[in-house]
Length: 213
Ligand SMILES: [Zn+2]
Image 1 (cartoon, rainbow, N blue to C red):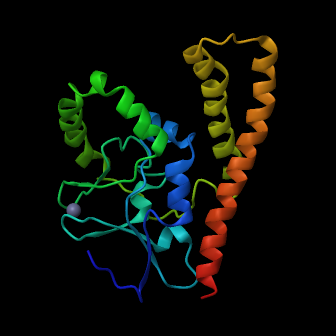
Image 2: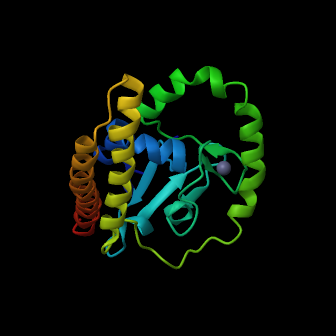
């Protein structure tokens, strides 16, 4: 679909934020467990004085509706979007990017979920209209705004800690020692905070740059 490039900046997989979404292995947790998804195409309005979230539009390729990005903010439907972002205009799903680690996990576990995916998707679709009835469009704040990055970073660090300290050694048949478990807490707390702060900087730099344009 062609979009007005004078009005919108188009973000697709080539954009750094989107590439990061696909490459960072920790984000597989956001995708597979939390059901947080990033659409394949996002349009960022070229206007000054608005936050990035306010300027983000998500187009539905099926009906052409431009959805406000706030529909999938933390206050609204940021999570449980395992099958894509639901278009409450036409009832289809907006295609999303897939994180490479998620992709690998899905590929390896294919024989387990393959038989259930159709019925899961049907049930998921049935539940969607209800979730879009009371969308809060008055609050525009991202999950990394203010001190939100600390919480987001620690969540991420916690999941990575579980994954790296317990799950991966379990798969590899390595011993889980107390010292490794304790070191892990330190490493992933720092790692998580760095992750949260980097995300905040990436998002803020993008929105500041647009504001001065
Ligand atoms: Zn649609």
